[in-house]
Image (cartoon, rainbow, N blue to C red; front, side):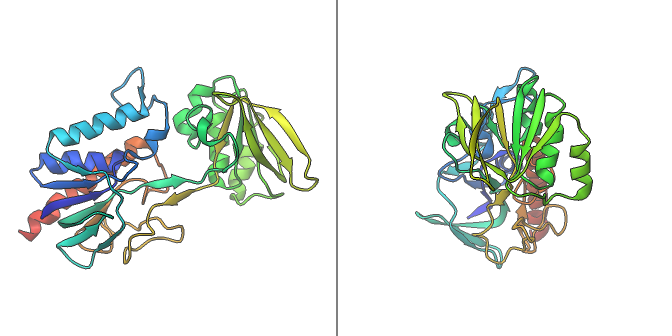
Length: 303
C-alpha cells in the first residue's frame, strides 16, 4: 500500500515525487515505458532555472529522476492502462501488475500533434519544434515556418518574430480558426507572412532542417522553400483517455476543481494534462509541487 501513486514522469510527476518522498510518504511513480515526458524529445533547455548555460532535456529529466529516487521514490517503467478512482484506497494497473494507493497524482502530460510527414520525426529537437517560447532563441536571425491556424499558431509566430529574421505562417485552409484579435495582431507584424491553402508534405535536410516541400491545396503544385526551422502548432492531445470518471473539458484536459484537486476526492492533477495555458517545464514542476502538498495535506486530514 502506497501513500501516493504518481502517474507520469515528466517535470510535474518527478517534482511531485521529490516533495512526497521528502514528506515521508511512501511513493510509487508509474513512469511509463517512455519515461521523462516531452523534454526527452528536446536538445538544449535554456529556460529552466538553475542552469545558466542551459542543459540537455534528457539530462534534466535524468537528474530529476535521480533526485526523486535519492529521496526514496520507487519507479515502475510501465504504462498505466486503467484505474479505479471511486474511493481510497485506489487501484491502478499496468500490463504487468496492479498497485494500491491512498492517493493519486495524475501527471500524464500531453502528446504534441505532429504533421506525420517524411523528415519530421528524426528532426524533432534539430530544427523541428512545437514550442516557440522554449526554442525561439536558437533561431536568431534565421528563417522559420509555423504551421497551424489557431491561436497557438499565431502566438508561436509572434514569439518567433522577436528572434527570427522572418516567419512564414502556413495553413491548409483559406481562413483561420484563431480569434480575430490574434489574427489581426499577427497580420500587423511586418516579419510575418502568410501562406494559405497550403501544407507541408516533407521536411528536407540531413541532420537538421534545410527546407520544406509545400503543396498547394488548390492546384496540388508542390514547391520547395529553404527554411531553418519548422514550428508545429496544430494542437496537443492530453493523455486522459484512460481515466474513467475523471472530469475533463471539451478538449480532453482534466478539470481542476480546487487548486490541484479533481472531481474525485484523493485524486490530484499536475502539469500539462490540465494546464492548457502555459505548457512549460517550470510551470509543470510548480504544479507538481502544489499537487504533492495538496496530497500530503489531504492524507493528513484523513488520519
